[in-house]
Length: 265
Image (tube, rainbow, N blue to C red):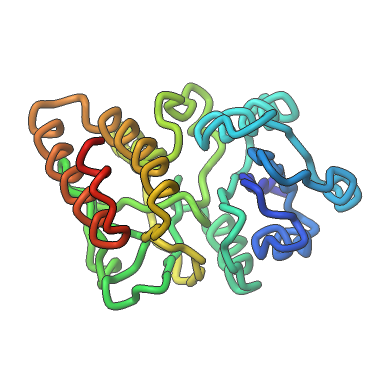
């Protein structure tokens, strides 16, 4: 039987309130690794272990990439061959049983290295949150993901299914704290000619792109700015496009918070 792992990064959400964990704990053939990035909530380690899963404390919020790498190191310790597949999840994704059925079908079919589910959020008119299109420096949503060429495919972490052997000589970029961790991974794997497919199954992401609290918005923007500059630092074209994205993001924050301090960031 092919080993299947799930990595769930939790940030201040009790597992009893996490739709992701509640869905995963019903899947007895999947080993779930809970990476605890929480700073305000104490997760129930006993619950995780009672469910036959793995709890890893990050001792505070160390960022998404470090949490993923910690989980991958644990998997490699348990299975040095890195056989099987791993799924990635946030703590706030609604995962239907049909998703897991599709995962098992894709693993059995075994014709790709990375599988991307369809991920929808509260803004369907903008297109799917994932898969998205990534052409050179341009990344954007799409309403017709199945029409994208494989070399244009990108996607977010939630629900991504990955062949573990891709991590034999790869770990996530720990200079990225939160944003573009997934895009950086896909970009790296496309350069290595990894095969990417779309799964015909839908996840609902409880995602809000707009923070109306000025203080929280400024803190979140500080992380975003650092991460996106890291992601685009490799070329002049990327740095120019990054400046445009940062300006656009500032404008959006100002519209939703009316806080002029964003222009000083």
